[in-house]
Length: 187
Image 1 (spheres, rainbow, N blue to C red):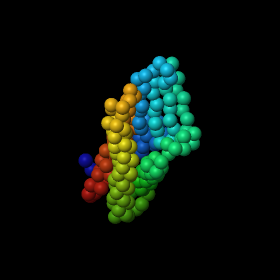
Image 2 (tube, rainbow, N blue to C red; image 1 turned 30 degrees about the horizontal axis):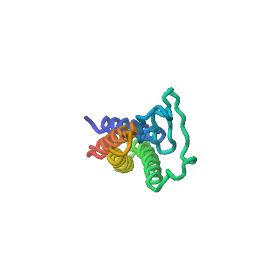
Image 3 (cartoon, helix red, strand yellow; image 1 turned 120 degrees about the horizontal axis):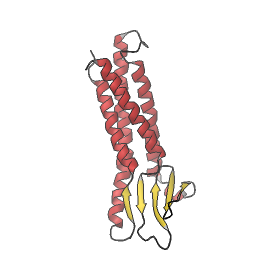
Image 4 (tube, rainbow, N blue to C red; image 1 turned 90 degrees about the vertical axis):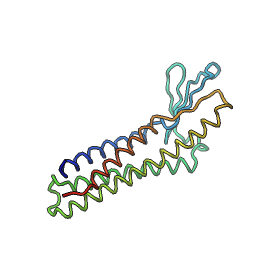
């Protein structure tokens, strides 16, 4: 595969990963609490996200409330997770802009040496963005798994990893792959 096609493939993967990172930032599916004692409260489950908590009732109705209502739930871990995900989104967008500017098939710069350097910088930014997504996803997964084991015998409720964590791991892999494709030696 020539360098131009490799760069376009890397940019396409990075765009998908950045869109996925925006999606995990917005979705309230980082942690899922499923209630097995349905009768008294009629609550089936809760979905926890970075910005809001959604309650699902047995009737199928979903009601979402921001964390402003529950300020005790927003701790330093949640603030750090939010910050890292937002920085990952911004650095991913910056990496896409660098990747477009340094693409061999686009005449944004006339010097091939500068294009190579900008393409290399784009790959580095994508790898950094991958780590910025991986850290909060693994942190929240670790906290959730600890809660799963803590509540295993004490409660009738069950806690599960949310879809945003799985999407975050997939996005991390795409960002690493995109960065690797752009870092690969360009002829």
